[in-house]
Amino acid sequence: VTAFGAFPGVDCNPTERLLQRLAALRLPGVAPVAPALRVSAAHVRRELPRLYADRRGPARCFVHLGVDVKGARIKLERRAFNAADFRVEDVDGAQPSGEAVDPARPLGECRETSLPLEALRDELCAKGHSVEVSEDAGRYLCNYVFFLSLVQAGREGGAEALFVHVPPFDRMAEDAQLACLADLLTSLARAEGRGLVI
Image 1 (cartoon, one colour):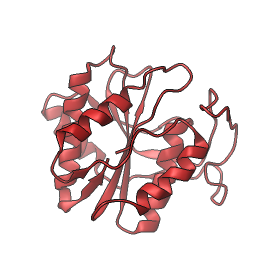
Image 2: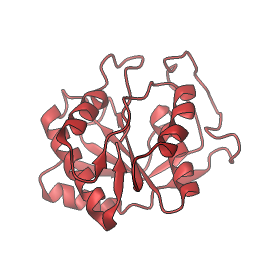
Image 3: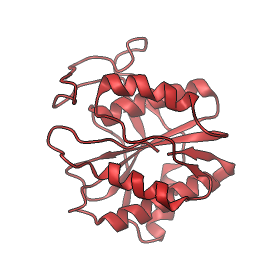
């Protein structure tokens, strides 16, 4: 699981705190490997292939966390687009508009996770969590890392990628988010014996 650090308009990214707490839980089948990613297209492009190459054991599912500043529920993202239209600059000052995330692929290409999102949502909601499936991860760094991860997972053969948007802590309590993410990761790790990289 990756998380993101601060970026313009978000001084304290809740995903960074959630990643620290998830790592401390030592969930079976879930192996923490990385600190929060910088909210930088260049950093993500550099670090993501390293995370895939350096994964521990038979990790088959890569989960990425990001904040939806207007959200009130946890969102399981279905798809990402080969489109970078940053509404604000990243932390390095880059603000692409109308550009491809991966210039080697068609602009606007859509990639989808093959994970059973509706079944995961239903399982989590049955446990009392507030979760929905979303069809659009936006066009900022969340979409950027998700698209690149879906492409990389496709190259790996049998690997999966998922992006999860979480709301700010003032819209959903930190402990509620942690419990939901722990249940999600446990479910993913259990399914077909997948290992997770977080």
